[in-house]
Image (cartoon, rainbow, N blue to C red; front, top):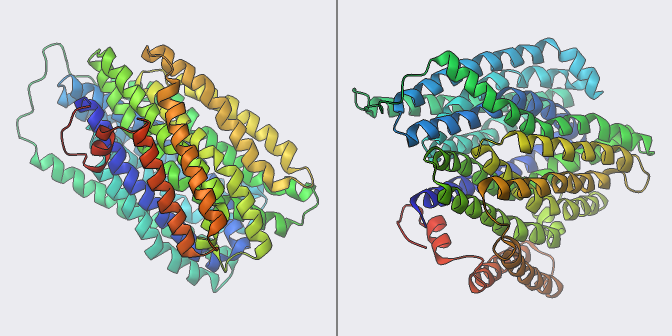
Amino acid sequence: MTNQTKTIAKGVSVLGLTGIINKLIGVLYSIPLARILKPEGLGLFQTVYPTYNLFLTLSSAGLPVAVSRMVAHYLATGDEPNARRTFQAAMKLLFTIGLFFTLIMVVSNRMLTALVGVEEASKGFYTIAPCVLIVCVLSAFRGYIQGHQNMVPTAVSQMIEQIGKVIVSLPLAAIGMRTGMADGAAGALLGITLVEAAALAYMIILYYRHEKKKPAAAPAVPAAAAPVSQKRLARQLISISIPITVSACIIPLAQFVDSALMVNRMVASGLTRDAATSLYGIFSGMVIRLINIPTALALAISMSLVPAISAARAREDRKAIIQESGVGLRYASLIGLPCSIGMSLLAKPILAIFYTGTLTPERMQTAAELLQISSLTVFLFTMVQATSSILQGLHKQQIPMYTMIAGVGCKILLNYLLIGTPGINIHGGPVASIVCYSVAMIPNLYFCCKYAGMRFRWMEWIVRPGLAALGMGLAVYGLKLLLPESFLSTVLMILTGVGVYVLIACLDHALEKSDLQGILRPGRRHRR
C-alpha cells in the first residue's frame, strides 16, 4: 500500500468515523426535534431546509473542492506560496458569493414562501439566511486544510456542528413552540445558524495557530513556479468549481422541487394537505436522516480522493492514479453494499429504536416501507460519490455534472408520475431516487475506467463485497426470525451482521489485512 493510498485510508477512517458519529448525533437530534415540532412542524422545518440547502450548494459546493484540488496540486510540486495565494483568492470569492446569496434569501423571502406554498415558512427563511455566508467562509478554511490532506480539523468542526445543534437548536425550538409551530421551526433553524458560527470560529483559531507555527521564511519555490496572481487563481477556481457546483446543486435542487412537488402531488392523489405534509416530514425528516448515516462514509471517501488523485496527476504518476481510483471504488462497494442490505432487512427495528412513541403504528409501518426501499440508494449514492470524486481529481468534473442532470431529470419525472398516483403516493419518492442514482452511476463508472486507464474489476469491486454482504444478510435474517423485537435484539443483529460481514470479506479477500490496518490504525506504516 503506497503512502498516498495510506493517506486515503487515513482520511476515510478519520472523516468516516466522525461522519458516522455526526450522523448518529443528527438522528438523535431529530428524535427530540420531531417530538418538539410534531410531524406538521417537522414538515414545516423540512420545507425551509431544502431551499437553504440549495442556496448553500449554489454558493459554496464547488469552490472548496476546487481549493483542495489546487492546493494539493501546488503542494505536490513544492509550491507553498501559490497554495496560500489560492486560499486567499478563494476566501475573497466565497465571502462575496456567500454575502450575495444571503441577501438574495432575505430579499426574496416572500417569493420563496409563496413558492413552497407554506406561509408559516417566512420566519424560518429569515433565521437560516445568515448561515449561507457563515458556511461559505467556513468552507474556504476546510478546502485549504483538506488540500494539505489533513482531514482532522474538518472532522472536529463537523462534530461542533452536530453537538451544537443538540445543545442550541433544540432549546430554541422548544422556546419557539410556546408561541406557535412557525416560531418553533424558526427557532430550530436559528440554532443551526448559531452553531455554524461556532464551527467557523474554531476553524479561524486553528488556521491562525497553524500559520504561526510555520517558519518565517517561506520554503524555496521551484524555479519554474512563478507567483500566480490572485486574479488568475480566482479564474482557475471558478473554472474548476462551476461544473462541480452544478453537479452538487442538482440533488438540493431536486429536494427543493420535491418540497413543493411531493406535497402537492399527494394532495392531487386524494390526501389532505395536513396528511401529505406529515408524510413528507416522515420521509424527509426521519427516513432520509437514517439513510444519511452510512452515506457519511461515502462523503469521507469523496473528500479523501479528490486531493489524493489531484496530487498524483500533478506528479504524472499514472500507477498511483490507477491504484488510488481502484481503492476508492473498492471502499465504496465495501461500505455501500452491506449498508443497503442491512438497512433493508432491519428497517422497522432501526426505526423503532429512534422513533417509538413519535409515530403511530400506521405511520411506523409507512416509515419502515420507505426505509426498506430507500436503503437501496446507499450503495448507489456511495458509488456515485466515489466516481464523481475520481473524475474531479482527474480534471473531468463536467462528466458527473451531466450524469447527475440526467439522473435528477428522471427523478423529477418519476416523482411527478408516481407520487400523484393513488396507492403509491409517498412510496414513489425512494423509487425515483433509486433510478436517479442508477442513471448517474453507470456512465460515471465507464468514464472513471476510461480516464484513469484501468479495467472494471468485477471481482474486486462487486462480486467479493457482494458475497460478503449476502452472507451477512442471511445471518441477520435468520436472527430476525428467531429473536423477539426489542432494542437488544436489534443491537445484537447489527453487531452479528458486522462480524459476519468482516469475517466473510476477509476470507474471500474483499477486505485485506492492510485495509484494516489503514482504517483502524491510520498512523501506522504498512505494506500491502
